[in-house]
Amino acid sequence: MSAPADPGTTQRLLLLDSASLYFRAYFGMKDLREAPDGTPTNAVRGLLDMIGTLVTRFSPTHLVACWDNDWRPDFRVQAIPTYKAHRLVPGTQDKEEAPPELEAQVPIIRTALESFGIPVVGSDGYEADDVIGTLTHRHRGRGPVAVVTGDRDLFQLVDDEADVTVVYTARGGVRDAEVVREADLKERYGVAGGMAYADMSMLRGDTSDGLPGVKGIGEKTAAQLIAQYGSLAGLREALAAGDPGIKGARRTNLEAASDYLDVAPRVVLVAQDAPVPDIPLTVPRELADPETLQQLVETYDLGNPVGRLMKALDLRPA
View (cartoon, rainbow, N blue to C red):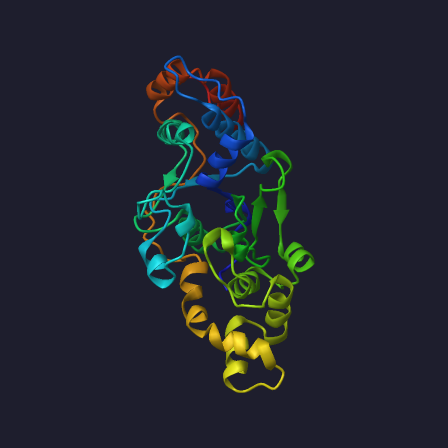
């Protein structure tokens, strides 16, 4: 176990699942409000306002916009070829389907974040989830970590001992987003913590990610099996040892899913050792590129959301 953080140097790390948030901003803010050149700006404005709200609510000392350098990494596709395959643009192997009105805003979002001085961190060959997992692992013992996402996959990181929570945005806006802890996982899913949630999700499967799961095993049964045997590995050991409690169709289905269960952890578990650059992650105290930010304000009419985020970060105009 890592040494506890010195109270005087506790770092409050806020990790943003950037794509999850800008997709939510796009679909949640119906007013596209085109810029003078015709570019829609709802996702840009919505995301900047989200970050301002989150900074005000959680008062982080460290803040990272985690980025998908690869939204469908090869190592996951090699393990399970159906991984996110339904989200591909037809006829392609690496392009994710997204509204063109949102695609046009993603470069603007990234430039705006970088101009503020908010670290935008990705890792080639890895998803934002892996960046989040790696930074969470590195931060252990330094202070609390809050992961902001609408993706349940990241519930696997919830860890009361390490003070890691998930700010889950799928059921409401970021202002009132639920802060998920181990007790919430126990109450909602019947699992003891983040790793048990991951094990349960492998058995259950996830159609949104193209993971087949085990035939005949839904969420409730999966949670019961993980609780009974302690982990997915414990369940599989019991199965191999001929545990008489696993019989009939359940045994047949688990044995038939053996190849899937061999590779599922490579797909479901986020990396803890992705090659993420070691850069300062502190909340910006001054604008990194005020000239570029001003150009964005003028080109895309972003004065109000930029002003609100500057106020939340306690930044002054250049």
